[in-house]
Structure formats: structure tokens, C-alpha cells
Image (cartoon, rainbow, N blue to C red; front, side, top):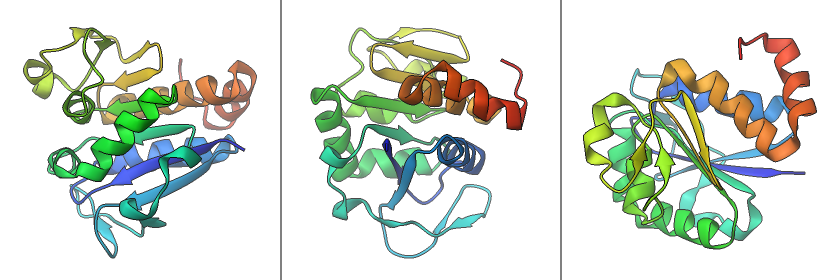
Length: 182
């Protein structure tokens, strides 16, 4: 079974988080929401999510993919968390998949893994991503790094993650139930 880590910090973007978790679970992945602090975590629009565990209690070696949701101040809170950045570095060095959507590619840059990578982000943070070859595509895959733009691209992003983890057939199967336009 493929295992996916989703770090969760106060101010996360709800659509990006819940869509990714839902689609990956539909595909059969074990998704773990790991919070940067105790208790229900409140998103940028006031939706509270109960995490599965704390980020300090996970072992990145157990995961095939880490996915960072965007949102503000969620992205800034992830960026301040040294454990999150360490997990990103370790997973990248271990040749595992690393993904981020919206403003969260900034966290990947802070972790030092975006140098000379083709990536995308929400337009509001484009100017802060000075190490990348910027793309305006909705979902960008460059090697083991997957990025996407916004809440409006979350479904495409999640389905691409399913395709990467499980293959096109599983992605098509999941999409037959949600009927996204790809």
C-alpha cells in the first residue's frame, strides 16, 4: 500500500487539503495528516480538521509521497517548521515524490530542493520562487517534484498524484467516479 504524508499547519487551504486526501484515499493510498501542533487545526476559511498525528512523530522513511497544501498563513507556518523542511529534504534525497500546491512550493524552495526545477505556484508567490524555471501550467511534474497552482487545480493535481503513485488505470478508475475534466 502506498503511504502519503500531508503536513498540516494552521491556516492551510481547505480545498487543496481535503481534495488531495479524498482522491488519494479513493485510490487506495494510506494518507496521514500530520499537524504541526496539537488539536484540531483550523484552515484559512475556518474549517477545522482533526489530524491523525503530529509531524514530530512521523518517520519520513515510511512514506512514498509528501504533499504540502497551500493557503495562508498555512504555508508560512509550514515554512517555519524545521521538521517539515527536514522531511522534505530527506524524502527528496531518498528519491521519493514531493508535491506542493498553491503557495507551498515556497516551502520546497526553503528546503533547498527547487534549484533548476520546472515548477508552478499560485501567481501571488511567483516572484518569491527565484530558483525555479517558472511554468504557468496547472500541474507540473519535473522528475519527482510535482507542483500545482491553486484550489481550482486541486482535483487535477490529486489525480496526477494518483497516476504517479498507482498508474493511469487507477487514475482513470478514480476519475470515473468524480468525473473531472482532464
